[in-house]
Length: 343
Image 1 (cartoon, rainbow, N blue to C red):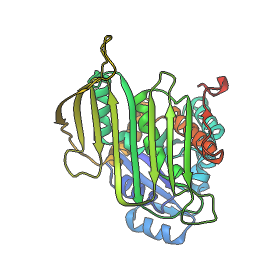
Image 2: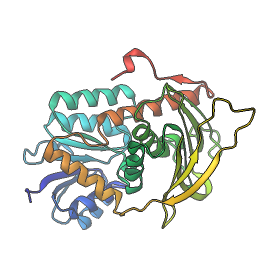
Image 3: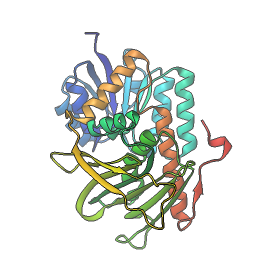
């Protein structure tokens, strides 16, 4: 086995703790540094990774020539600056979602990664979920036929955030999946939502978005932290079959439902679609976070772009931004088809 990749983590609070825990125990990684400005977070990091150097200044990571890769799990508002500094210091970078808050910053990061020949991976965790991996394979194999529609629900009785709405908090997962499965960016985004609890305010608790693609496909994304039932469900409709991924089920997370949605040329005023058999798709389950972190290490070693690459990160940030602008405009459609927006 090749030698371990020397990794540092910036941001050890919240989700960052999971990165510290995972890289501290993952074969093929040597977690040498953890950085956080919070004394409490540093204390937890010391417990999780006692052999790592735990510091409060990220410059100590950027300045260590032996450190090869940096994971950025700090507040989203810091992602662009920290990722830029890390790549300019010669480090490969894994940035938690979203890659940036502004599409221009995300595009600049993508361009910098190409200029510096650095790996830039985005924390689109669900792209590494075994169910999404298998669903993507089924799409590539043509099992679903021509894709028509994606519908996702990500809802829960969640944590009220005063600096991030439900759209930015929850939708990146579903937008990254839509980008993978459809293989394209939307042509336009329409989003409507409401701030219902912390009134007056402008942080929407509930957001429903409609993404339209140039070839007529559509994706609907429902995001809410005001729901009594935790829902993590995605339905993908094709002309030959439909797939359902329900991450809250302990078994049968991914099912395939045969249905011929073709319309005969001589069809009358009504067409009744035939429902075929339902199949449970077998999965060999592993932790998506472990798979994601392993994928980052593989990219650092091989210099090949990861599945959740910089362009994937840019596409999600662009869709997020378009949805946010639509929200602010009361649901007016926002186009993403400007010539300067094309990669």
